[in-house]
Every structure is written in C-alpha cells, then in structure tokens.
Length: 68
Image 1 (cartoon, helix red, strand yellow):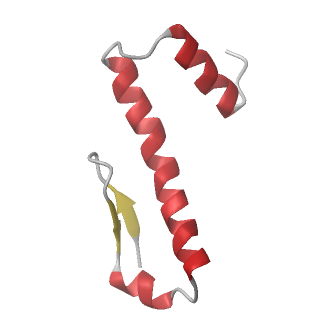
Image 2 (tube, rainbow, N blue to C red; image 1 turned 135 degrees about the vertical axis):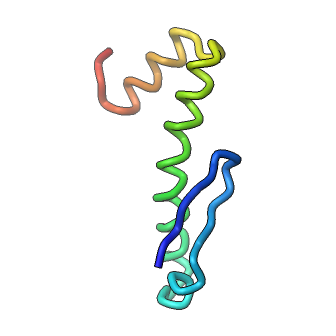
C-alpha cells in the first residue's frame, strides 16, 4: 500500500491503499500528506529558478516556524 506525488503534481494512490480505506476522510488525509511533500519541492524549484522574492521566502520561513 502506497501513495506518492510526481513532479507534475499528480498523486498516485495504490489500489490496495484505496481498498483499505474506510471512509473519505482517510482518503483526504492521504492526499493532504502527499500534497505536503509536493509543495516544498515546488517552492524549491521556483526558488532555484529565481522566481521567489525575499518576501516569499520570509513567508515560507514563518509558515515552517523558522525565524529566518
């Protein structure tokens, strides 16, 4: 049972994981977990391309709980 994201933002969920879920809330939890992996990677790609300003980086630090 597994789920993962790809660089294009797609989320793949194994059929066995879907079968083991008892309700939609569990599915939503898996999607949220996978999105949490994808967002930082996307931010790093933008930052590496010079598309993130100091303001954006400061906001991201505060969201992560860092004082930067």
